[in-house]
Image 1: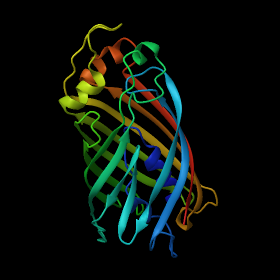
Image 2 (image 1 turned 90 degrees about the vertical axis):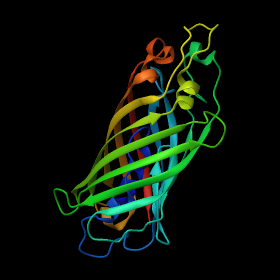
Image 3 (image 1 turned 45 degrees about the horizontal axis):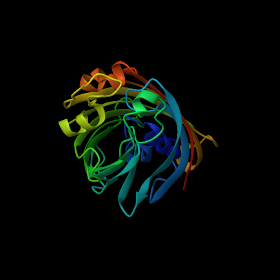
Length: 279
């Protein structure tokens, strides 16, 4: 199951919710599991999603997947990146996580399908880094489920948007059987003025009306993920498949910008399929 969750967290994308490694370690099994010590998941997936935030054109993109726990440090996937949890909370009840997250933001940096939007040029790739904190509550409605809350606060250190984005998420995870589990997540993103101006402002003199964007909530969304272990036992590692579907809605100036309101769509859909291996 754990490999399924790793895929789930990574694919859950694009906006949505990280799956805490602690969730995966709390799987139904009376015997020893692959998660009792150090473990690692690696895989690959493909996502079908909007070509940029607010686009109504859709493209396929590959996604690498990594998750695990090595030397007490938990590795949690993020859309376009990863988070490291250094707390290693081993308590029986609520578990605290804390560390650092990093991700590549390639919004409007590649795969722009709309010729009008492309006429404004491709943007630079942002490298966003910052603290990640969270808390997970196991055993909410059964012995093996969990409810997690997480906040990543990220700064661009690559000189692209030079701004800040805050991404809160909530995730409910539960096994449906020994070989299958699901994860339902909801989240959003709050951006500052620098971020909004970089991605959503429209300069004068082009095909679209001039627009000056300001910061605020730029999107909210939900994702539903299902993972299936290929040998029917989530607790022993091995190969697993993940299927993910998601919806998000652009808000504020991210919705009002002509890149969305004229050339795109505030409603954003996403689907993903992945396979991973846990050992």
